[in-house]
Amino acid sequence: MAEVLVLVDHVDGTPKKVSYELLTLARELGTPSAVVLGKGASAAAEKVAAYGAEKVYVSEAEELDGYLTGPKAAVLAQLVADKSPAAVLLPSNAEGKEVAARLAVKTGSGLITDAVGVTPDLVAEQPIFGGSVVVSSKVATGTPIITVRANSTAPSEAPAAGTVEQVTASFSDADKAAKVVESVVEDKGGRPDLGDASIVVSGGRGVGAAEGFGIVEKLADTLGAAVGASRAATDAGWYPHQNQVGQTGRTVSPQLYIAVGISGAIQHRAGMQTSKTIVAVNKDPEAPIFELADFGLVGDLFTVVPQLAEEIIKRKS
Amino acid sequence: MNIVVLVKQVPDTWAERKLQDADKTLDRASVDVVMNEIDEYAVEEALKIKEAATASGGEASVTILTMGPDRAVETIRKALSMGADKAVHLSDDALKGSDAVQTSYALAQVLSTLEYDLVITGSEATDSRMAIMPALLAERTGQPQLSGARKVTASLEGTVGTVRIERQTENGYDVVEAATPAIVSVVEKINEPRYPSFKGIMAAKKKPLTNLTIADAGIDAAQVGLASAPSQVVEFSNKPPRQAGQIVKDEGDGGVKIAEFLASQKFV
Image (tube, rainbow over all chains, first blue to last red; front, top):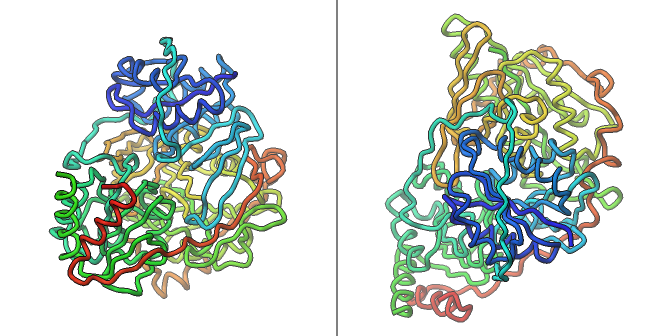
């Protein structure tokens, strides 16, 4: 079977969950080869082999972290030319989509983003317009380049050889045009990343103030969840902008989404509508969020949410 | 400092958005259309950079570039009424059904006819939500990609400029720097877009608007349009709206009720 390249999203050699999901999906499309780029890449080899990577292409060239997206696309383009893979899968986060875009231009290929499934004949399924329409698309030109959203496939282990191959790439000046001068990590209180998390707890206008997010965070921590926020809450400065879920923020698709004090305007729904299970707490019984909730509770979040957190702790102990 | 702002006309998010059965493209005709919301922030940022440049004695201009059907002129006028100086409208039936990769080719061709130090656009469009146009254009032009900016600082000494952005990341931000000309996209945290004034609306009607066909812009007809699109829609289906589940009113044990539901679904 033909090779399927998977770009591994990792931090210092520790792959994010979405990478294991992509490798699991790639096993249905061909023989997965992991591509691990940047600082600490070699350390990921064994971990990705456990999820089916027959080959692991590794480069730790400094340019890969020193410049935005261009160098990663250059390495992938070289691998596409050398290995003629059946497809390239990338995580559908901001950087994954941008690397995919540059790779599509470099290789003269078609590109599909935000897939939630890919069939063995490489037809990708994408929800569009906030999930109201589902589209099946195919790449007609070049090598299919497909970005896949987190939580689209349940990751499962399938040990493979994981033969490491060092890749030497050359980078053009254009690949190195945007220099990363500094990377600033803002504290997430040890919570999982929003894009990767299986459970997301989000707060909205009903939370009332920055301090109100304390109870949202507390509930999230009892569930090991990431914390999100509606645009109303981030615009008001109650919670950091990078945690915004919705049309102009992040799109999440977790197993469980708990909306706390969020009315459910269409802009918010566009970012969370494909969540598997949705729970909502809102004092307004007419709030549109209840139209999509699997379980909705009409009540005061300031009493309901702490009680819920307490009950979860009790059940877990 | 010459700035080109890429502005897209999109269906209003509040309207019912549909694909057409015949060619599986977005129905742009029968739906209310607006300026892509995040592009308003791009226009605002361009105007701010222009104002700062002129305040310190420099020269600056803001040009709107839009690809879209004739109707997109409404959106162009809005951007002009906010304060942009002039506009270029690429409109041609041959472009209909172009995907993002083809659109980036067409826009890059138009950009190659313009003189600019910065291209600024919104981080994503509310209809496609791909968020890749800056990356595509950077790759095509060989110019730096400075995308996802929550802050932009641009300076120009003669013809040599430097742009520095704070790029929003998943766990904070990166400071990214490049030489001009550069391709920038902004997130909505960056500023608060102005409303067009009455004076601005009147002035917009007299501002220069250049209409281009694909031939005018040197765009190869074989590389744009639905038939030659590198990604093709095979089929689509309208999904029935999600069914509401159980709605319970809090009787003092609401938190426990939710925990019971979560336990029944094996989340706890």
